[in-house]
Length: 241
Ligand SMILES: [Fe+2]
Image (cartoon, rainbow, N blue to C red; front, side, top):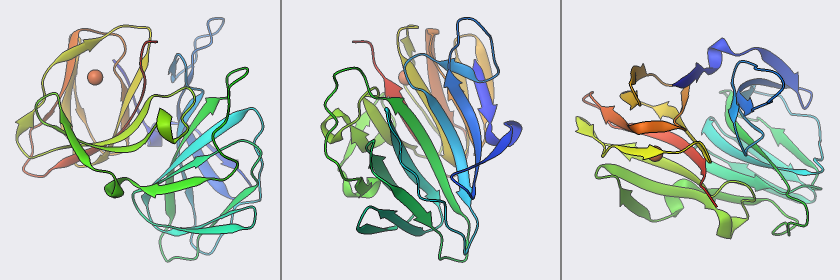
């Protein structure tokens, strides 16, 4: 099981004032590095911006970023547009768009950040950021007890990933066990609450701020909510083609 809490990852300063801890990165076949578990997605990080602080305007080329507001509030300035941000908002930031985060609130703005490479010849959807709260999407159900809200999928413009989701499991509920091969990425980041994650032959209590990569999992993996409170997971995956 590849498991990492953000507090155990080195902190770096990025975009001027964003304090970032990269949890998982893409595997390097030449060098084994801690957290280097992703096969198709470049990186997954937890970051925050202090109250009263802005990031430095920034433009990405060759990559697309997906942000998720894990807590706090703020503003996203992208080109001539301004978007208010609140907890639960997702953002797809296409390449070539200058963007800045502004934290005008009283609490840190906590972000989860995914980076995906733009494949050769891929058509990027739109030249503006897409901002949407996960709660605006309809809830679905899977693996018996997963209550699933889409944040984004390929129709929204994801390029390498197929799904970014919020998965909720109610109190005292186990999920159906299912397995995955090594030809994909699937990561579960405990956003709220906690559970017991069984991956292959290993078991851990997955606490808030801990990410678990579940590929491969043979014979399977299952997240069990053993507590009296619901849990919510930030999930992202690239499925086999
Ligand atoms: Fe799974």
